[in-house]
Amino acid sequence: MNDWMRRAAAILPVILGGVALWWAEGGTPATASANDAMVATIAAARERAAANDARLKSASRFESGGWIYVHLEGDPGAMGYQHGYLLAPEIEDAFAAVSAGMAHSTERDWKFFRKAAHEMLWPKIDAEYQQELQGIVEGLRARTGSKLDVDDIVAFNAFEELPDYYVPWLNKQQKTAKAPNLKSPGNCSAFVATGSWTKDGLIVMAHNNWTSYRNGERWRIVFDIAPKNGYRILMDGFPGVIASDDDFGINSDGLMVTETTITQFEGWDPNGKAEFVRARKALQYAGSIDEYTKIMLDGNNGGYANDWLLGDRKTGEIAQLELGLKAHKLWRTKDGVLSGSNWARDPKVLKEDTPQFDPANKESSPNARRARWDELLKENKGKIDVALAEKMLGDHSDTTQHKEEANERTLCGHVDASPRGVQEWNWQPYYPGGAVQGKVTDATMAKEMRMMARMGHPCGGDFLAKPFLAAHPEYAWQEPYLRDMKAGPWTEFRSGQAPKE
Ligand SMILES: [Zn+2]
Image 1 (cartoon, rainbow, N blue to C red):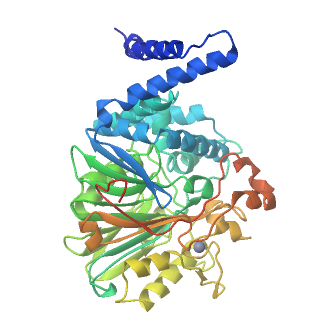
Image 2 (image 1 turned 90 degrees about the horizontal axis):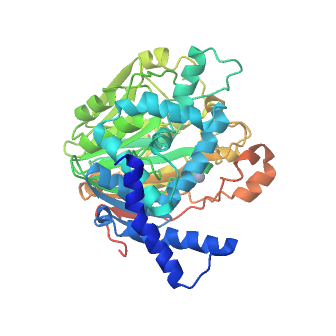
Image 3 (image 1 turned 45 degrees about the vertical axis):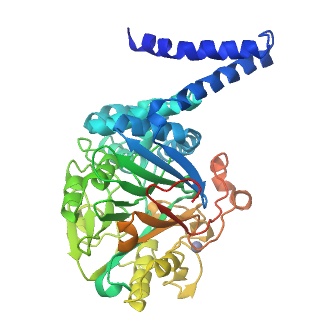
C-alpha cells in the first residue's frame, strides 16, 4: 500500500462511523446546513477516535494563572503526537500569527520558508527530533483536520532564526534589490547569581521574555517533558515548538538554563544545525556546563545567537556562554552574578559577529538595561532570592533619564510606550512589544523541578489591543493577530503536577 492508501484505510472506519452517527441522528443531506452538520459529525468522530489513541495515555493538559501546562511523555513520536493533539487549537492560532509576521517583515512568502525548512534545516535535524516534529503534525491533524505538514512545522519552529538571521544573510549573498531592513531581535532581560550574591548562597535564575506582544501573548505554555531518553525537562514555551525558545528551563540532572539574544548579530551558516534543535537537545542531554556548551557548538548555524546564562545546581557554578558564529566565549564562576539584556561583551564577538553594535551608547535599550542590572544586583548583593528576583523582572527604572518610567530601556520592557522604539532591532516608535512574561527559579526549587511563572508584563501591567491600535494605525496590519495581554499572578509549576493542585 502506498502512503495515501494507508491513510485512507485508517480514516475510512472513522468516516463510516461518522456517517452512521449522522444517519442515526436522522439527518438528510439535502441542504448546505445538513452537509455542514455531516462534516461536523465526521470531525467529532475523528476527534473521538484520535482521543482514544494509545499515544495520549500518559499525556495531560490543564490551565493555571494564564498558562497552559502540558505533560508529554514517551518516545519522540509519541511526545510529538501528544504535543500536536493537546495544543492543536493553540498551534493553529500561533502558526497564523507567526507566519503572518515572518512574511510581513521579510517580504517573502510562506513557500520560501517551507523550502528553507525542507532543504536546509530538515536534513540536519537529529532523527529523534524529526520524529517528534512529525508527531506534532500527526497529533494536530488527528485533532483538527489541520492541513499543516512537517515543512510548515519545521519552518514555524525556526521562527526565531529564519526571518532575522537567514534572510538578511541571504539578501546580502544574493544582493537582493530593495531588501527589507532586517535586524536580529533583542529578546529578554535575565540574570543568574550564586555564592555571596544570593540569600542562601545557592543559584537563583530569572528571565523575562521580550518579544512582540502579538507573539508574546501566545508564549504561555509550560512544558513538562519526560522523554524516553535524556533528562526530564520543565520549561516555558510556545505552542508547536520543541525548544523553549525564549528560553527558560531546568532539567533533572541539575542544569538551569536561560538566555538573552545578542543585539545586531550578523551571520548564518546554511550547513549548520538549526538553533531550536541544538537548544532542545542541550536542555535534554546536558548534565553540566561543559556538556551544554559542547552541544550548542556542535553544528552552530549562527541562528538566534544568544548569551546563554547557565547554572549547575550540583556544583553551584554559573556560566555565560556568548555564542557568536565566528567567535564565542565562556565565563564561569562559583561566586558571582551574570546578567543579560541583549549585549555582547567579548571583544572578538563584538568585532566579528556584531560589527554594528555600539556598547558605549548609554541610551540604547540593551546598554541602559545593562546599567540597571549592574545597579540593582549590586544594591541587593547577598539578598537575592526568588521573591526579590520576581520584583526585579518588573523593574521600571530608566538609567538614561534617571527616573521611573516603563519604556524600552527598563528591565520590564514597554516599547509601546516609547516614542523612540528600539532602532537596533528595527522596532519603530511605539512598537507593540516588550516584556511578555517572566520566570524565576532557584537551586532548591530546581532540585524539586519547580519554577515560578507570570504571564504578561512581570510588573503586572496589562496591554490592551483596541486602544493601542486606535492610537497607532501604523500597526493596523497586526489587528487580526494582536490581542489583549493581561498579566496573571506569579504561579508555581512543577514536574508531574496534576490538574487540580
Ligand atoms: Zn512593566
